[in-house]
Image 1 (cartoon, rainbow, N blue to C red):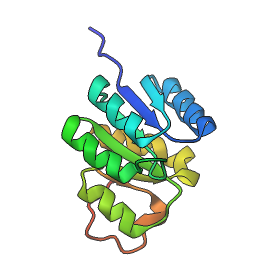
Image 2: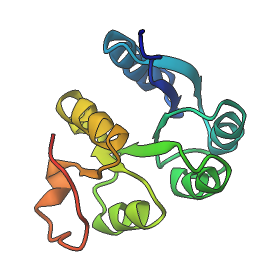
Image 3: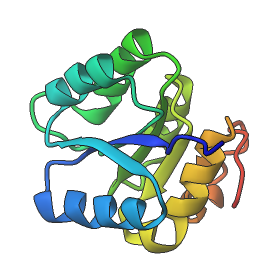
Length: 145
């Protein structure tokens, strides 16, 4: 009996980036249930579709990714969230994990770090981009690969 594919919601305000991420994930055998461009849409789709995983940008219009993640955690508590961002802020990474995100990946590192972050999130583990891991975030339990 085949297992059903992992259902993913991709959220980013840059269409080209969304398409790149969607193609990468489809190539890995994951199912993209939707891709949206802002925070309110992300919250709505998360509640409606109850995906297994959300890849969520922080710098979204109208409602940023941190606030969207807070709302999603209340509406789709079983959904794993990996924040994918250009922001190298240790404080934002700590806040992301505080609100229940499973991963924090820097966009420039996504080519090599997105897959390990997705795998870690689906195992219920945390993943922190290597560019931030060395910045003294010792109070965050995180996995590599």
